[in-house]
Amino acid sequence: MSKIVNFKVLSGVAALLFVAATCQPASAQSAGSYVDFLNGGASAGASANGQWKFAKSKSSSKNGTNFGHGFGVGAGPNGISLSNSIGVGGKGVGGIGHNLNMTIGRNGTHISHGGVTSQGNSRIYTGGNTGIRNTGTQRGQIYGGSTSSGFGSRTRAWSNSRTRYWNR
Image (tube, rainbow, N blue to C red; front, side, top):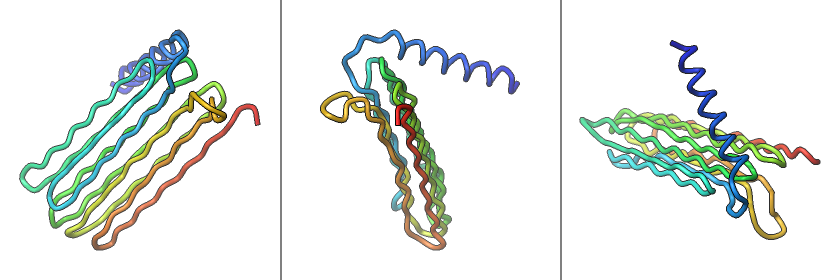
């Protein structure tokens, strides 16, 4: 089963890289997503920009359990950007969320991720974005970041980010 899943993931990444390499120049690549739980409700969102883009989000609250997922991917001639946020929680018990952002471009890479856990009547938020700038003096610059926060009993939030440029 894992070999089939790995093949599907690798073939999907290969297809996205092919699309990115064959796109006409004109738009910046970017992606963003978030998950937010507050007062027993859930919300999630996603965005994508590029010549090839896909964004989807889903949130639900049922029987006191919240679920949220946001996923966005944008691709173009300069690279590919991906953002994914997911979280689950319940009123009175707390929640947990995680966010991952990644860009692979001609001039470098960016990866950031963050997470949050909280107990009790609490709020959690996790989200981020990443991309490649297409205009102005910062053309080709890779950017991104992740934000995770919350409040409640025993809340722990963390975030890490790293950007590497090939030509520096």
